[in-house]
Image (cartoon, rainbow, N blue to C red; front, side):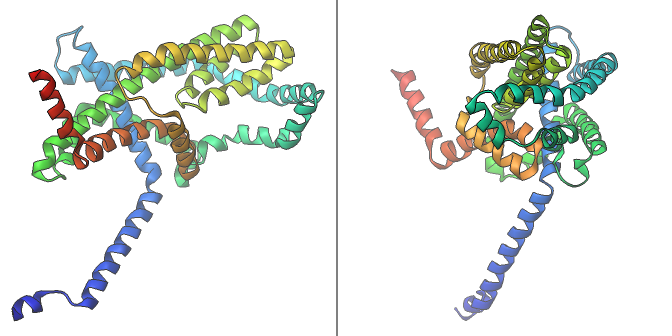
Length: 361
């Protein structure tokens, strides 16, 4: 009894242990905060790796090759397409981006002058920033580059792109090496369940990426064709911008429509109205045709929760957080469903018993 009492920590020791745990937790959270942008880059590389491996899996139906060769072929095609697109589109896109930056101020002034004729339009314009401030923000791309530290510069953004590509290739060729390493961090009894959760996350992200890729292509091409028919200048650049920004749910369509509407005012207010109708129709078709087909294979994200999560990550780390907020939220929902609801709350056992009862009946 005396030995047991002597082996127990004293009150002062327990206090020191609690203080140490609190300090360690605070240091870990601080480290996580400062490295959060790096973790987002790693997550982006994982997304791209899942996309590459998913395409390699589809390639198995066409060619009878090993998994490594299929991943290599898909990776080569992916890099080749990006390189070719940059070489072929860069001259036209760069030229049109220059024209876009020159024309946006005059088109914004033209739109402001037209809206000033109405009382409601004048009230809105009075509350908006000046044209010069708006153009300074656009030209500097602050809303896209505010990631922090070395990752906030243009060269940093280019470096981030190549880092993501390189990491994704490593993850694509040897996914089991990294996944098995993560699974070994769990207790032995929980490793099989952890593997199931990782598989579910991979499946969810794969179908989310398929949906986004199809949506981006559909929206970009349809917007380019529609703007060309309406006679809006720089239709190719605007279509490309719309397709890329559609990767960001909720906010992407709104951001991509602004320059198109402003350039539409150069021609006439009616053209701007037609441009607005075009964007609305494209988004309605995408929301009611493309998205429902994909949501049959993946989870449906609550719109309000998605918007709140996007705003939170955008405030925390800037544009990169806004871009990756939706897939991160999808991962969180899968983890909460499979870990908290099914395991901790016991819904998994209840569901299994219900299924067995249905089979017996």
